Amino acid sequence: MKKILVTTDYSSNSKKGLRFAFQLASQMNCELVFFHCFQALIPTTIHQERIEDALQKQVKDQLHKLERFVASVLKPMGLKVGKYRCVIVEDLSPERAILDYIEQKGVDFICISTRGAGNIMKLIGTNTSKIIEKSPVPVLVVPNTYRAKPLKKLLYASDLENIEAEMPVVSSFAKPLGAKVDLVHYYHDLEFKLDAPSLEEMWRKKYRDLDKVTLKPFELDLSFANQMEKEVKKMKPGLVVFFTHTNLTWFAKLFSPNRSEGFSFVTKVPMLVFRKD
Image (cartoon, rainbow, N blue to C red; front, side, top):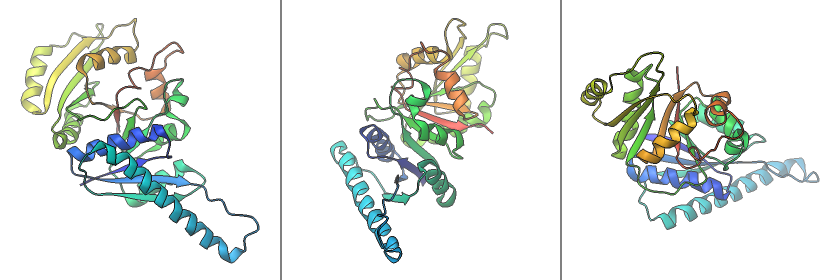
């Protein structure tokens, strides 16, 4: 059973991450762990012996708040989901608390929400960007415009450098969902022209979950994000999958090569980001 850590700060934007996680749990056998980090407020006048009691009371109150928050998101969705639980951690740094929990408890994925459009830091948030950069497990990034619906198709954006290893990983995520996988790759005309029909036939035989294969020349007058946006509008996937050297520089390059770039791609479709070895 896969374990997914779902972070929340009780904001309306973070509800989108919860909805996406519940949608996943309704389609596949997984355990959801809803996680909130808070900073305790201990009065300076309190006696030293009572500090621990005051802390535990605040943790208990936060746990009840998180349980109510999670239930308020799940109830109107009307979904049947399996096992889930809520976890509260007191720490000055949400980033550190999340990464420590991943290391100590072991999770398979982390699910986080974006804040909305803007420059790359505003888009994904300071804590979120650090988690994407440092997470030892794959990250599900859910846009603040997400609307819950069954996941029927994944779009795998591939550089074809390691498809033999990556495609089985994508298939293993898609299969429990009952979802098909589309593959898109952009090549440079200066390199060589790919034999799309032959490759598609070969890959279809090898990877049963693979549906459509799109191999296109890279348009030099458009950014990768713009070209991906066109494919997303055309294929309408429920999730876009990347394998990358996960860091903020990569995200900035991908989605904001200049300030005029739009963010309609990343702000409409959830992403699943795997770290390359």
